[in-house]
Image 1 (cartoon, rainbow over the protein chains, first blue to last red):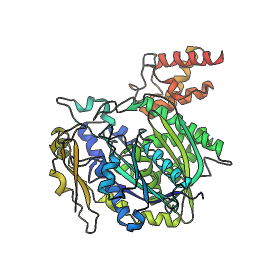
Image 2 (image 1 turned 45 degrees about the vertical axis):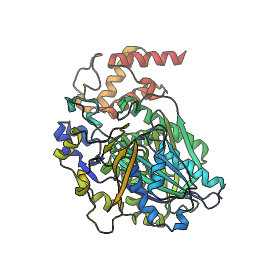
Image 3 (image 1 turned 45 degrees about the horizontal axis):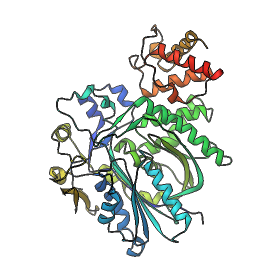
Length: 421
Length: 84
């Protein structure tokens, strides 16, 4: 048995979104520089949203489409995140509860910066391939949020993160992994990994991010080349230009992917200017659409790009997609799989685009108010009642939308959630 | 490769990636950031110089220098160490 991959997947890009160009004008950022990011909107996590609510809201529509019997075959639950809020208790325990999964499930949380999602997918695929429980399924939930908490008296434009703010998003992608990979069939064994210790970006303390933009970009570019070379060494006849009809990248922001693709085409495929630009439009751009509407969602970003590639690409016959995943610190992987016309139509049926369109558009006043009022729940909070001010405003306007999970309160460190319509 | 020759390669790469600087004199104390290079431009300038020097090292090993002069010194030293 070697059929394995993604049976079904869904994207949750939040309930509130901010126009990036408006933000840039407001912050007095260089607009030309901002255009290079290829970002339109970014999802903003609201006070009652955390990695669990994002993850649950991505997974729920998948489970609602399954019979009880099928759900009972989910025997592995991996939550992939760098936004965890407990060093011991995993986010999977909350997700397992909120999603009503069987108690006979192996569950844990997985961390490796933005590579976590790919690590989770590959572990799940190996669990299926090992055939230790024939017919079993795995649920992989990649979920991450970025939050910019303004400290008192902070001069926003002068902060290091001035250009990181417009690209930092929040969101989750849920993957149902099984031996019936309708949406994305993994090329088993076709993978190249590359990793080494580097201090590029990290989260060394609760609610804070630290990093060196230049070092991270350089490491990303090194890995992009080396992971592909490791893939090519394993896969006979692999050709960067011809083997993959589409390429989906981990996308911190679109401009970075554009640069990485240009570098790869020049160095590996020996291509020149005009050909590179046409290739970018054809093979890469379809995968940047959703990323430019949600922002960087770390461990889930490569799947957001895959979903965008599938929904915005053309699949008159089966097409191979090459994926590049990078997580700071660092570990990276280039791997591939096949999307069929049926798979593309199944994913389009999840209505990701409609969901992204339906998000509440925050005004800058609302956004700044959210940043300044410290309404956000910090990691380590023992007791609190969570501010629900935006819950009504962001309620889905469309009938038939799935219920969504919100964080209501924390009591003795225990997070209490509720599903609302 | 001498530091001076490496510096010349760097100035050529800067003008190739940032054509608007064609007529500007570049000095060793200039920084790529102040010259208007964004992070991707900065990486591409370094990649171009490495190619011209035929120096095959990870980009992360070029990280650290604070201005064009320091970058020239670093790349020149790295090339010399590699040739040994």
